[in-house]
Image 1: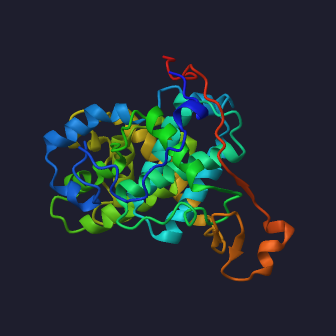
Image 2 (image 1 turned 45 degrees about the horizontal axis):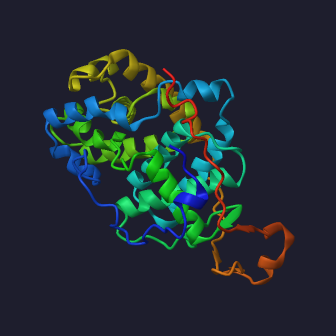
Length: 328
């Protein structure tokens, strides 16, 4: 189906209310800890259905063949993480944003993956995820902080949101690693003594590795199992747990995949521990008319180094075909 700017997006805006996209969810809850109460049957259903909420199997191969730009994706995810830290969004909001981004990129090719198109897509995906999960959602202008290179009008972002919704078939309640980590933590620590630490630390590990394209090879259940195992390695009483035993936590888990993800995750956990925290940039706010004003100094807005382009009412044409989404 062809998606035309002129035919499909005329004066259509997404609502700003945080709850406008309510509906049935395949997950137990957006609350991480409530997944502890999910039964094994529910977890098995999640494992069966998770394939419907990940990009196709050849998505990672496109990055490895450089038909998609892994560095551009990494930059976009880094920006999403900065905004998440700035507004203290939930971890699930961040993961959903990246999930929407990857699923869109798998189904639709952008004319350029290192310019304003990818940033517009990132803003739209983060906005949709925030509306799904956050009780308070910043305005579309206030959402564009932390070093955004371009500032987009709310109407432009609204039309991009509609395009994302169409490409994803309105399936925003994705199954994520957070659907599993509470249950897996209980399986690993049946007494619940270290439950809180395991869930918290596994969450940190998942988000710290979300920029790395190599993890696109693994599905959410596998990432969750590997993250819980990595977290357990930091608890003396649990550090000797054999990763091979994770396969027994629930039907549908695969030992080889879990071990592969676990080893990859261990490498990045060690590497990330050596890195310095990214520098947080000052917040910039924008008026609807395009005048940029800084909360720190009005002079900084007029300097050439901080000059930004405002892109109004622009979306690139989308091919009738779904790129390579039908491959495989």
